[in-house]
Length: 70
Length: 566
Image (tube, rainbow over all chains, first blue to last red; front, side, top):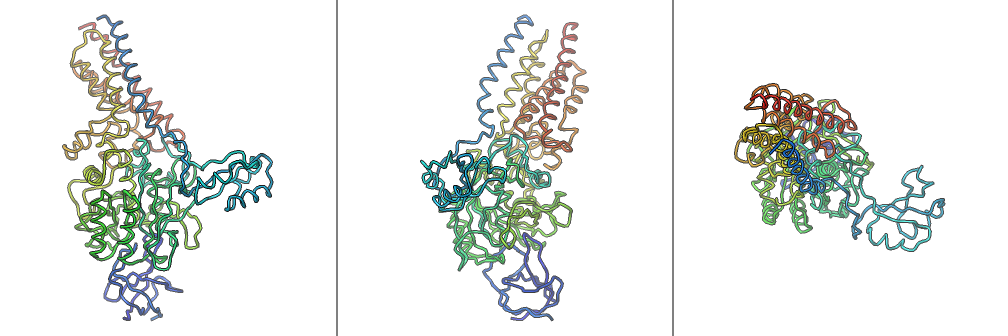
């Protein structure tokens, strides 16, 4: 699936990347986000992971396949 | 009986009391046990013959199979070297009879009495806010209790005792070692068991607990439910008594089953509430079988990010990094694996404060999973259940007081005996006078632990020693209020109650009870006053013990004069 939104750095523990969608959902991003910057508008291609566990605990998890500037 | 005989009998009674109660108090002093040589991994200290060369060091390293390093550049003359070895007993055996080696010993920690000398401790507001100093002072520091950190792994950083970190296991596909490649798990382990009183870095809640690293989250901080469930099963089989789950996600029946099995085997499972800032607690924190932990900031209010609602059982400090020095500060690793000290926030950071407190309670003895949960929830500071804070804020001092730990009984009995002996020395004594003095002295010094479970918020206050009332009423962050941690309350009480013959015995008891607490605190810690540097804390306590003694002496003097006249 493709989602558009804003890249945000979640400041919990050592921190992790998340995507705030235009609908207001926060997806924790699993995987690398090379060159990402907080506040950047992006389009993320990836798959939601239903059984994901993590320390971000801020919303559903999306396994990232590709990130593009939007 | 003449006054002289009363003094003699009283003195003998106090002496007998001291003799009788001294051994248990002495046992509570944290005397490091002789190191046991086990097959566990750890740091081995090797003292080479004085004047040993770099070649000798290299040769002994080769024999040992791991590189030895000088403990300190200045220690080269002393030829003192160390190495982290996979098996302490085997490594020691390898060096037996080696002429270049004078002596070998596992590196054991140095535990300061009372107040930790860890340089970053003053910035660890979160430890004071949940009553960690009461745990250290009680002498129960988690010894012998395995706490599983089911997380991103745990790395052997400088301020974690290598001898107390087990090898652990990884349940992340493609990752063999339980080493931390993120920094989250090591930070969590630090809150639980950071080496304390070793003059290095920061402090932890239960510094003598053993950490079992269980890696279920990858370097990016996420993992699968199957991995978490397998990690919980592994931790139970490996003998963990407490499992820390600073992680969460959606409900998963496999994790639920693993948690149920852990609880059935008497394991305390502590889990984070979540960081959404919204209603809806993440699983496994929302399960009835876990202690779900919400986060508070330095102000003691619920942190804005803390998930809330059904499933929050307890609140603990999780930090607020928007506030200067408002994070939870521990030793961990950065992404490149270097040891760093970092202040983090999150319900992930709140959870290990509870896990550490559970380890302290278990190490105090006589309390297992259900008892630990009942005690921690029952003594939390709060008025009933609240969706953000659960049953209230974690308070280890109150939990130990309810269990009668922390030297309270011995301290109370001593103070009571002393007050009784002194009160008996005044002429025309009355049962109300000496009885009141002895009772109040014991109460002021030790609290009335039985009241904690029956009396609600007021009972919880009365259950504590009087010098802990500021912290008990206003929260552990206020425990160091200088007016209260001084002989001022005793003086005030003497001024009010000491004026009347009927209540003078109570004032005498208060001064003696608080004085006894100061005496105990001057060598064992447990009380901590604001604005006074760590090394001066014992002096403050001793000076106020003396002050309380003077108040008691003045009250006795008044009673003698008035008693003769009456």
